[in-house]
Length: 209
Image 1 (cartoon, rainbow, N blue to C red):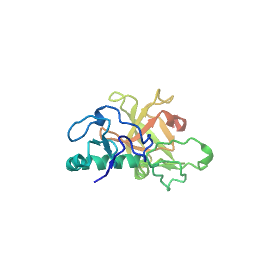
Image 2 (cartoon, rainbow, N blue to C red):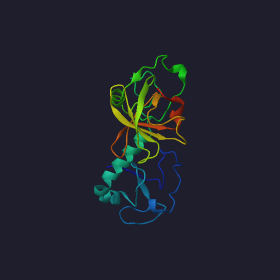
Image 3 (cartoon, rainbow, N blue to C red):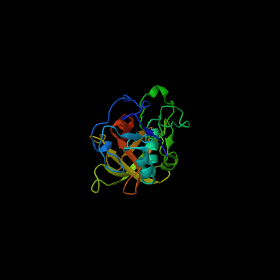
Image 4 (cartoon, rainbow, N blue to C red):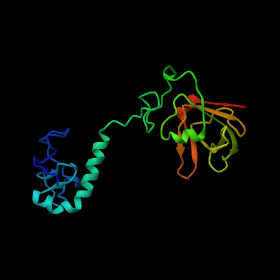
């Protein structure tokens, strides 16, 4: 069980002043008895649950321990930098795609075509230096706006969806779409394929063939 910060406010190990008194708010009510006071002490692990005394903390611990661990682990994870995959040739491509690079100076000169199968295989990473090339064989815009089905050279068909201010010029059924540095997406409705967003457009071209 975690100890209590007994200074009547945030602990010296936090970013707050160690002498700061807790505000009289819901978060500063004893979790066991409901007492509201400026002399409460907080759990040193999760730092968001307050108690009148160590006895009250011990009595409430069976109920609090699951939430305490979850809150503390979540806060610790948020404080860590995201993991960086090392198999894509550049250390600034995050696995959760929080960074989208358009700096062509770091890209390979060659841009071999990648299939739906290969792209899905490296999900959720970005296929740096590769190009997804598909022909739009079906128009699904009557069901959902700016959504098509794209067939690759292997014959696989997946959804191609645009979440942009406006679609690329010339986008229509029958055209060939090429997307440099693509990434694979699984849609909430159960389909999968390409989810092209506004910042992806510099890497997207559309042609008749």
